[in-house]
Image: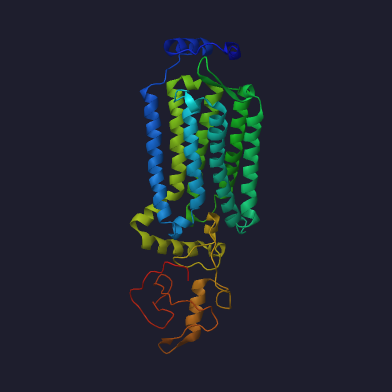
Length: 394
């Protein structure tokens, strides 16, 4: 490939002359940008619009405990990063004419396309790290354990992007007006792809460590499918850039590169949030009861903050940045909340009358269904065969 700097100052080529020049430059058949590229952009936009509507529904039902336990905030950051990733793909993959703002190659390639894809994979890595810490290490995910990995990620990404910003353009990427193209240096190309393998490799290792996690959160199967989708993106990108460095001039490669990125990035988010969201739509109350019961059966109540009850938020959802005020711990609240209630009932039951525990922290009367007791009795001494389903923290 010739040094395009020698062509600086010449009038830009257009139409067939530009295509002919690019074919001589690359020794391939160059496909001009046409309606199929616009159709690809529209398809990606529709996919992300549908995902946006899905995310709006998730946030509207954010207080639904099985959804809240799925780290909605991290998934939202992933969605925004994925959206910016796709916009960067439009420019970097050659789906748009490089006119106006699209000429800023370094901005679109480094600060939009590459940074966004790193943020996306980094958020997924942090999510898997949180699961590893909570379920395998039996440690809380809060305080320094939560902030240090995030800060390290930010520092590494900013350091890499800032170094790319201040290095001379010919070593990163630069725009040549004569041919209206962005030329990416091969060393920068392979360094960026190599760095992309780091978070995905960490995700794979953590997913392997989480393979024996209890099935309450379906993380075993989710992790497997997420890794398949992630490595589909990673291997595809690596192979295309290694074997077809001028793929942006070949219609099938540039369009498939963009579509695969879009589909896989959206599917990972939908996979993480889809099942509890579906249950929220069609079996809201029933599924939450089943979810809490399954949580107890799997023996992961201890992973929670100590005030797990139907309708409350758990320690697992602290991954989502949420904190809750637990009632003061006394003799009653040192154990599983349901065991506490049984202790209270056995201690204070006289004839058919039940009094409130005098040692436990007093809260408003809350009813529990036969899911947790043989009979339905409220703490104020009244019985109800059709209890209201509690939604708030007790």
